[in-house]
Amino acid sequence: MDEVRLLADGFDPGFELIRFAATHPRAGGIASFLGQVREGDGVEALELRHYPPMTLPGMQALARSVRQRWALDGLMLVHRYGLLTPGQPIVLVAAAARHRRDAFAAADYAMDHLKSESWFWKRERTADGWRWIEPREQDFRDKARW
Amino acid sequence: MPEANARLVFLGRLEDVAGCAELAVQPGPLDQVLARIDRALAVELLGERIRLALNGRLLSDAASIELAAGDELAFLPPVSGGCRG
Image 1 (tube, each protein chain N blue to C red):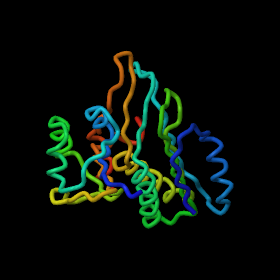
Image 2: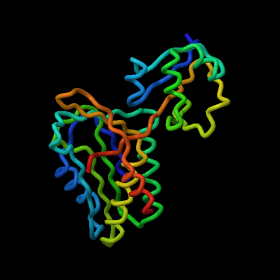
Image 3: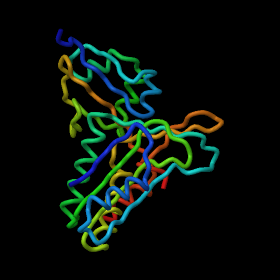
């Protein structure tokens, strides 16, 4: 079963991973990626906006496409929206599989597509005020790997 | 009571440009709808990198759409990535 969640409030990545692993005892390997708000560059806060009619449905469609490409026991996509501060977790992806290569590849693919395709808009606050973050070329190159 | 208006929804930086998250408009063909709103905003909304979604579905060709009462048309600027990592 897939777990795809869009959260308004903070989450505990360690707890989520332990719970996910316990849900999939037959999986020999679990690969995960945790993205957190980076400290530095004077960033005081990050705000993630989403569009309810499309953001979660888009994440669910991504989970289905990951499932079609790799044999997985389980897949978890957790994403925050709202106001975050440096050090707080934004995204957690985990893939459980019989063999580690499928788990690594599935988590990597899911992250590249979450970053380049998911319906999130970010702005960050520094001493100068709020500024919208534009997409980076690197995100499109990452997606083109697949 | 059924809704008589359609709604334009502005995501990301377009919300700042519009000064609001959404705008109620009279239904009709999109070009006429946009002709009735602030001109600077309309120009931004028609930018080539802005994608449109009608009632939650991405449009491949927005040029010929017609808004009906109760429709929600979203203007989606390029997404800025899931995290900074």
